[in-house]
Amino acid sequence: MRFNPPPNWPQPPAGWQPPQGWKPDPAWGPAPEGWQLWVNDDQPAASPQPAAKKSWFGRHKVLTGLGIGVIAVVGLTAVAGGGEDSPTASPPADTSGLADADSGEAEAAVDADTEGTDAEAEAPTQEESLAGIGDTVSGGGMDFTVNGIECGETTLGSEYLSTEAQGEFCILDVSITNTGDTAAYVSTGTQYLYDADGKEYSASTEAGMYYEDGEILLEEINPGNTVDGAIIFDVPEGTTPTEASLGGGLLGGDARVSLK
Image (cartoon, rainbow, N blue to C red; front, side):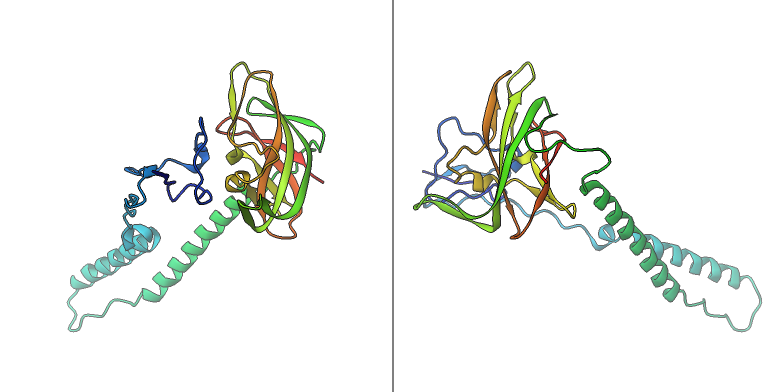
């Protein structure tokens, strides 16, 4: 039997087997229905059913609504014209150009609103002064202290098992204390880095599997205990992280730390 991770989970190195007590990161999402985590080599893994594709009308609600409006205008014009005694019926005015223009303006307005909302949601706030390296901040029932950050490594692991970065690895050294009354988890899926342009980078759980100096991977911490470790990020080469967003629990938090 071999371990068969779903396609939406990070892919482990060949031959890797989950250690005793290992649990998947909830941030990966559930396995597709019917997926077999353990299979024989001669038994093909179940494949998730492809999602049903929406119809053209469902994907273009704005255009569909405008088209219905144009048809209604044309129909009313035809009915009004039919009540007059006229030897020759006048053809309805061509509104296709107007409909196309209105459609383009409507879609452009929707896109502009969406882009503006996304940019506001993703950009880290600078309205208040942030804690820095060595300071302790709280988030999700945890206290976080960033001890430092190092970027530039492109390979993690040993001579026999290693992984390559898409760009380069940034290793965030942190200390985490559980300030609550019950045991709690710290997931790498709820920790983020930001650069000076507000771009957000999530932690790499796959890279953490190869880090040999204490990576925090869905670590459970009892009340009052402190865990020291690292959170690994795979960022483009030359990226300079300026902030970290840290949080405890499966839903994370929003404790911001300046890395400048």
